[in-house]
Image (cartoon, rainbow, N blue to C red; front, side):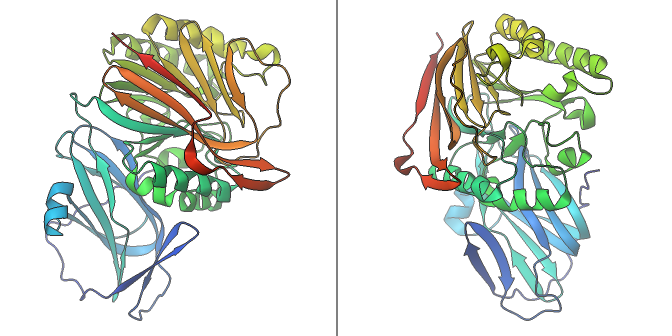
Length: 410
């Protein structure tokens, strides 16, 4: 179960602020106090990470190994950049484990800065200063990032995630298409969150569940996702950001216990949700692709039968998937289907025969997707990060798109 800290009504007296040294090692942020304390190692296991974001709220999560008090400071970027001070502080009683804190009452379409400060005895641990921008119904210009299959090789996940953060500092959010970890153990999640630390500090990080998460409750505990339905009310979900409607689906529910009931419930919910959306663009995310050259015959027939007609009837523009550890782009029945499985998992060798509808495909390449929205235009670009041959990683300089397409609306 997610643990939401209770805010103290009155701030307790704090020990004098000790100096803090920030040490960056291979893109990971370690916080070490320069003043001696009873316990030298930071109690912060991971975080702070941004989660689901809306017009007036954002979720922030972190995880600690010991009972520690915390302050969460935040302010509009305009105020903080002019004064160097925080406008608001939420203070929390000592607690350990996962914290899931909603910041409510924010201004729509506004950039904020924030910082987490943890207190343990005389030691004070400060996170980096992150930022985020709330949505607005009038927002028509922003970008978001997509990638997936970050399991197994967290050093490669870290390479891709740090490239995304460095080259897209103001992207509104990130969506992972599933298989975030090889298996849902505490240790593997810890390594995963260390790899995405820089990215999730300033980019709301959302996911759909893959098969390697094995329906673990930890997935829903660790990732604050939009409201929808199914497990934890987050197994499938939707939200709006600007003029884009985002929908996340669990493609695993087509198999396993109660599969028929779950699939019928999910299909009904998604169909109604997409039909009522008036957004300029509609994008859908789930792990297993409908189309891939790796599938026998190039298509996953059960998924196609469940979803494709719904997507056609409700005006879906792009479907993003993972599962196949490569990049594939298909165009079928006026819908773009993008497979992005280059987030760190072992990469696939090329498949000789291209499936029907193939526009472009690339193998043995770590990559991510950048989507830029500008009014009634959406630009989708597949950005290579590195090629991998014989387990050697060769960086791709420049960040030039290996595939791209534009969707225009009247």
